[in-house]
Length: 44
Image (cartoon, rainbow, N blue to C red; front, side, top):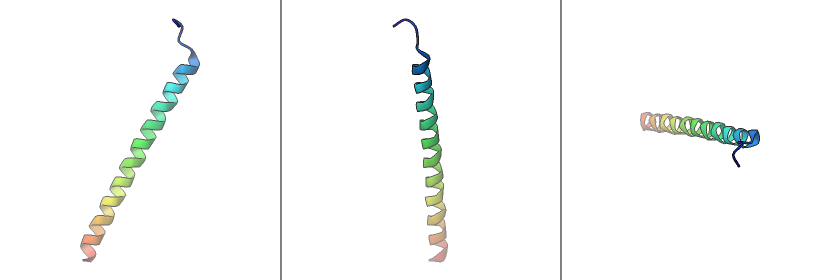
């Protein structure tokens, strides 16, 4: 296969965006956990 199919390109693009959104969600979850820990420390 010399020609790149547009479908393959789209698939790769979708995978990249999925990975990016997954990473962003991970970071949000981490910051939520950290803020929860801070709140717990303050309450104790």
